[in-house]
Length: 298
Length: 272
Image 1 (cartoon, rainbow over the protein chains, first blue to last red):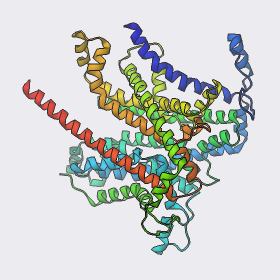
Image 2: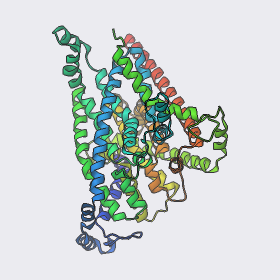
Image 3: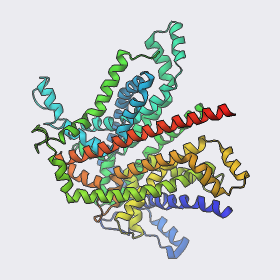
Image 4: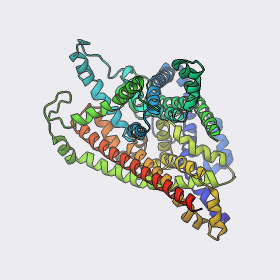
């Protein structure tokens, strides 16, 4: 009985420990190792045969050289800053677009709602890569958007959208919008309509009732949606490398290139460690919001 | 009752147009005769034919299928066990670390997961290929399965399980005969999620794949980098079609299952 419980716990535990936790420690270790342009082992190495003394020996040889390198080369901190900026702005645009959609869904006739819900979920199951790809054909210089705008006579020369930061914003908003819509819809659908009626009876205008009742009561959904867009957008790699230009700096792309093109693994490790440190703040805030939502439901 | 105001109708129309027009264009242009992707040259299905003769795409699709099949099964078993430990496991040493390891991969940037797994495989001297992709995919998708299954485990009445134990079932029997049928819908949706995540993943696979195994997303990514092509349009259309049929079918079956359950519950109420 006890053995069974132990093995039930041990199997998933050891799996995650070996394939999630240990790899992460390795990244951390390599970020503190010396820069070498070849394959491992990096110095210092861990001498398992020497036991604890070997471990202490390795730790004593660690240095923050790679992190110092990140601080001195402005490519890195510019990429961090521009990633945060791109993620923040696109989260905000997602909210501006997603909220009216969620609001429209929640106030649509009841029998429409399952279909509308399905329409939001469908892009979520569709390949991410394909959705990003579908924007390439649309946004290019000879793309359909430019053809359309020139045809209606709004512009004379094609706009350059693809391979700029603007395309990255459009890409993030387009692919992550369902993540914003779903949590907001989930809170709006639970909103008690009689509260709005009461407010109107008491002389509140509809707009005022919206700002003073609907928005505060959907706050948890708005916060959840914002984090669900912001967190993955910050480390995004596919969108900046397909839609962005050579001057688009996003840290996911920098990490990928540092690793595969420059083959500087210790620096790539340091880039990853700092990215995680930046992400810890929003992740902790997100968890707290989720807990609050759970408590509110009980 | 609820009526559609002009504002709501407009925001829904514009919103769904934004979500769907780019994909509709890909579908329409997959039937374009011309190789030039911006010029309409007449209706044709020839790109589907070319796609089916493209050896590189076919073998990549086969690799992706194998990875998705095996990794989603491992992820479902591991993830269900993980959820059970999380919800029913009680207190044990290192519980906080365990729940952290379940939730962290959900928010971890893919580049970091990929990088860390690659460094692990290199440091233990494991050759990169099909096997490493399966391990990597099973690891991150088991966490999604855990979350889906644990939300179902939390919400169901535990006394049914206890009744089975009181009536002499062994814990394993109780799990197989009582718990598993109740959480089965969540396990199935967890499995579907794991499968989709695996079929869809580009970043983690491109870290851990190595030169010997190319998955479909890796192949698609490298050809997209060269620009829009009618073959990719055709491939996208096929994938969008599969997803649409799958999602619609899944939502219809769950709707029917919910209705059947409600009916059964009503009958149970009446007879008691």
